[in-house]
Amino acid sequence: MTDDDIKALLATMTTAGVSDALDRLGRGGAVPGLLPFDPAFRIVGRAFTGRYEPVDEAGGTVGDFVDDVPEGAVVVLDNQGRLDCTVWGDILTAAADRRGIAGTVIDGVCRDVAASLRIGYPVFTRGRSMRTGKDRVRLAATGVPVMLGDVRVEPGDWLLGDADGVVVIAAAHTAEVLETAAAIEAAEARIRERAAAGERLDAVRADIGYHGLQARAAGSLG
Image (cartoon, rainbow, N blue to C red; front, side, top):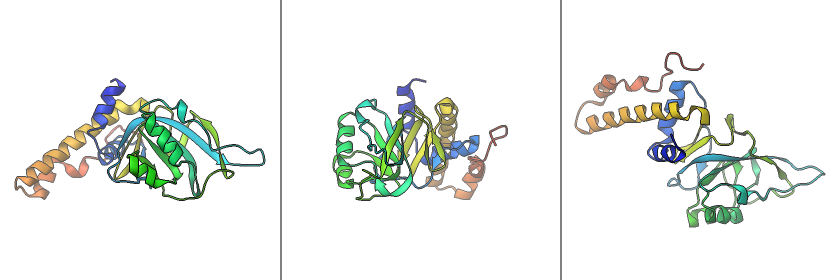
């Protein structure tokens, strides 16, 4: 599949469906605790990664990397879940939006939330805070593996974000995850249709095998 094919398919999916697919395949990728500023925000794209570390006597900056981010990518920033200082604000939001970047995901917090909401630029974080990261953290590297909680993100992995949070799909396993997610979401659509037509929900679920949709398949990892 091309990137355009993958984007188009992910645009029809939910993080819940993809999370179920990851469970069925025995793979990680569902990130706990990262939520959008606006439940209407959605992101789909490949990861452009950045890793932060505490600043020391050598100094350093929070980074001027935004002009290196490809159009359509998702900025993924690992600030080790810190809630005491931010690594993203309104200047970066405006620049990212202007460049056509798909959104920003931060293992940490963000400030200048009003700017994100005003222009509709998707940001997913562990919260919000006014306190700057300047002189507290520095950008250690970009284009390296990073962590979102306990989920590893490699540059180029796929991210999907919606009102329920964020899932990461390893680039090497994209096809099987999407195939499995599509099958699960199709099964759930049939359940909703039949229940809406008046059939008993328990009977429909049993008929379609709802309770086993996300159960780990034989031969899967783990």
